[in-house]
Image 1 (tube, one colour):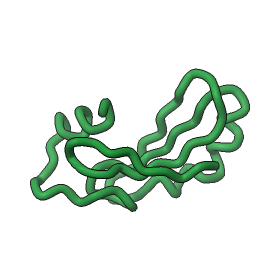
Image 2 (tube, one colour):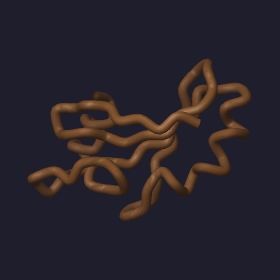
Image 3 (spheres, one colour):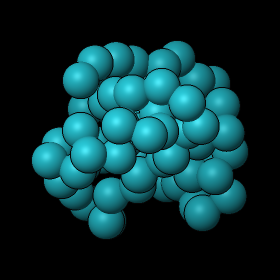
Image 4 (cartoon, one colour):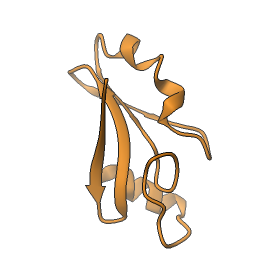
Amino acid sequence: MKRMFADTPEGQIYYRTEGVGEPVIFMHKASLSSEEFTELLPAVSKKYRAIALDVLGCGNSDQPDFKPQIEDYARNIIH
């Protein structure tokens, strides 16, 4: 499993990835982090590229200087 950061206009986003192929993105519950998917990623990665991210302001991702709305999270994930 690789642990990486992606630079986005809103700040750095931390993510874990494993496998190759079509991507499957895992998003954690509010106030948690991608850590909750560490046991799931190896199983999914046998067929897909599994990606678990810490959404903006959670886990190891940057804390924004504004209160994010749902549209901000969506835009950030697309970046």
